[in-house]
Each structure stands twice: as C-alpha cells, then as structure tokens.
Image (cartoon, rainbow, N blue to C red; front, top):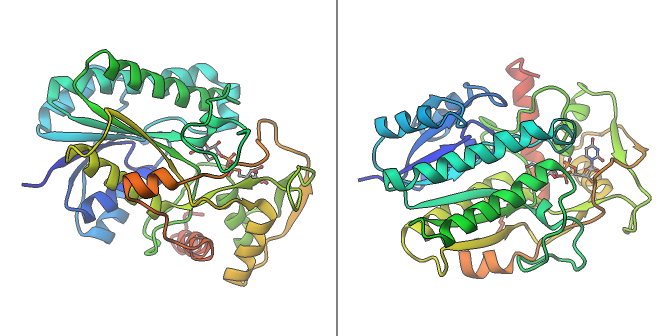
Length: 344
Ligand code: WQD
C-alpha cells in the first residue's frame, strides 16, 4: 500500500520537483495549490516525467473548512510538505499583511487539522534568510537567528517557532525544518522548472531570460561588497537535489528515525559562489553570453552566506550531488523549452 503525502503548494517550483521525487520514491501525492503563483500545466510536466498524474485540488489553504473537506475526501495522508507561501522578498516589504496572513494562517490551518486526520509529520520549507548575515561562515543550524531582513524572512522565523511551540505543547506530530539556501536549475527533462510571474526577482530566471534575449541586460546588484570580486556570495543548490532531501526527510520522520520531534537541517552545497562567478560559469557551461552591468546594491541583500551542510550529510543522510555547471545548463535547457512552448 503506497503512503500518501500532501504537498501543499505542489505546483510551484520546488513543490513540483519534490512531487516528482516523491512519486519516484513510491509515494502517492495529493497536491493542494491555489495556483496564485503557478500554472496547472505543471501537472502535465510531472506526469510526462513520472507517468503518474498527482491528485490535485485547487484551494487556498487559508480556507480551513475547505481544507478539512479535502482531507475528508482524501483519507490516509501520512505526512505533509508545506511549500505554499508568498515568497518574494521585495514584495513582502511593500505588502507585509499579505505575507503574514498568507504564510502564517496557512500553517496554522495545517497544524490544527493534522491531528484530526492522523497526519504524523510535517516537513516545512524554511530558508537561510532566518540567519540574516551570519557572523561565522559557513553557517550551521546552531547559528543565532537574527532579526529578519524582510517580512518574508520573518514569516519563516515565526513559522518555525509556531511548529516548535505546537509540538512542545503536546500535539502528536513530528517536524523537519529544511532551511534552503538558493535553489536553482530545473529537472533535466526540462518538463518542469522555475516559472516566475512577470519580471523575475531571483537571479537565475533573470539571467536565463537575458541570455535568451527576453531581457536586455542583467543588473548585478553591487560589486563593492567585502568579497573577493566585490559581488554577493550565495550557496546555489540544484532544485532536484533539494527535492530529494524532502523525500529523505519524510522517510526519516515516517520511519520513526527522527532523533527529536523537531529536526532542523541546512540544505546547501557548502560552497559559496559570487554573482560574477556564477555569470562566468553559466557562460562557460552553455557558451552563451549574458550581457550584464554593475549597478547599485539592492536593499535588503546580505553580503555573503553559504551552508555548513554536515548535519544534513551525516544525520539526514543527504548530500547535494549536482555540479553548478550542470545545474546552470539545466536552467538554460528549461529556458529554451519555454521558448519552444511559446511561454516566454
Ligand atoms: C541572489 C544574488 C542578488 C537578481 C531570495 C530569498 C530566499 C529565496 C531565494 C525563496 C543576490 C543578486 C539578483 C538580479 C542580482 N527565496 N541578483 N541581479 O536574495 O539570495 O534569496 O531568493 O525561496 O529566501 O531571500 O536570491 O536570486 O534574488 O539573489 O545581482 O537581477 O543575486 O543581489 O546577491 P536571494 P536572489
């Protein structure tokens, strides 16, 4: 009998890649997504890859009674992976209440409904933004949580605390908090990938749209940081590697291997790469030039962060595998696929 997992926000970038890896691992998947920042065609992409079309319900998870009805219609869910959230750092500064309501109410509903339906565990999509600018690099899970640089980052910190307090109060569930660094790339089939609405905020979609000619030039937000080439440093992790970590975390929880009721893992490669290095690596890997210029710093950017992934490697039993070159090639292949489909 296949175990069923609820993927909340499963038509999104990381949710769709995680659905593929859950299916590959033998899980049944139910996706609930309001399609506010994704397209239903993603289900076709998932089915083209795995041959299995996940169950899907379009619903805003802030609707608790609606969510309860869906769980009644889909009994036997063992675990939930919560991706569903608003995630644009800049927008969260302009519309904080949208972010606090959407990202927190969604979690509250899921936590309140889990015990009613015997759902044993929740894997939560968190972020390295909880660390702010770490004092020590690479950053470990024990690093101090710093005041969030944006309402988006604050919702990640608040949601981690809500999960810890709920479990500490005795709710009979477990949790794994996965702190992502910078997810990039696309499934090697190019059937699914990152599909931002409007002008991309994140680096890679903007870079590949510039490389293909949709954007005129990539702006590099500052080269006067205290880094070797002056541009910001991040830990860019392949999205398929990231998705596989969610399957490992879910199996760990459901198989009773979690050492604590709440476990936290940094999901990164352990390697810091600057914006200018990344551009050069893309150009070498693909042979495609990326017109770019240096402009002023972007408000809210931290200077440099990369993971110490030892706990994920040794305790969770997961290690990022894909090279940066191949990951950037997958992002480019996806951009070419979008053009073939006339999407971008
Ligand atoms: C990366 C680097 C920019 C665009 C955010 C969130 C994080 C996660 C990923 C959701 C920075 C530079 C970017 C551009 C640039 N969000 N850049 N020109 O800000 O590290 O992380 O997105 O899951 O939680 O905080 O990612 O891709 O926006 O920026 O120079 O046009 O690229 O300054 O140094 P970021 P990013």
